[in-house]
Length: 230
Ligand SMILES: [Zn+2]
Image (cartoon, rainbow, N blue to C red; front, side, top):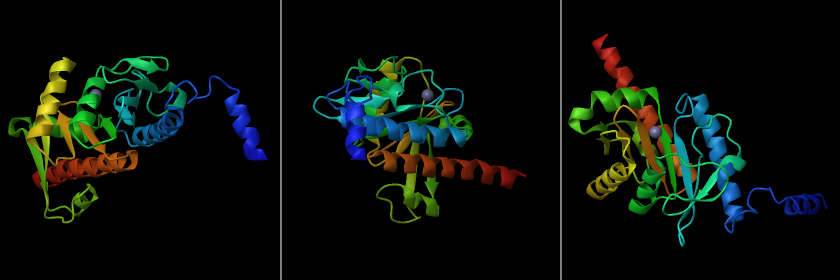
């Protein structure tokens, strides 16, 4: 009885998230999940000052993504603030506009087998993507936490995290992302120089796990380097 009441209330509210879109139910679920991920990442200091952006595929044919609107505090996101975006980064539903980096999200969901893309601006990714830029990336090897990356079975795995030069020209950067994904099959993420981390997953939970693992590994690298030099 209670459940029926709830459903009816929702059905009569035209503003209720999900009813604005043919992909409604999936959009609503994904937006709620992305908002929760945002709160968690913000509390860890990975998306401070409205930085970072998150997306998830809600349909492939046609391609539709739920994505964060630009300029919002990622610690206080509500599902209603998410946008539905098409394959050309046009907003199909929702108020606001996606980040210019939406084009990178599109390049990733087209380039790898991923339905969720998460982007963070942590201290560790900013430090390492600057200090390792000349090497073109960072290699992680020997860490037990590597096994948190999808498909990795042993700490002996060598994970390559490419570093791309940062740019404000998103069409060009999107092409660079696509090229990096083609040339490095099997990677789980990449860094933009002195900017942040992009990672992805088959679903949101996998992508979230990849952020946690890669952020952990980057922090270990910085702290162990500091420990050795100290
Ligand atoms: Zn960014």
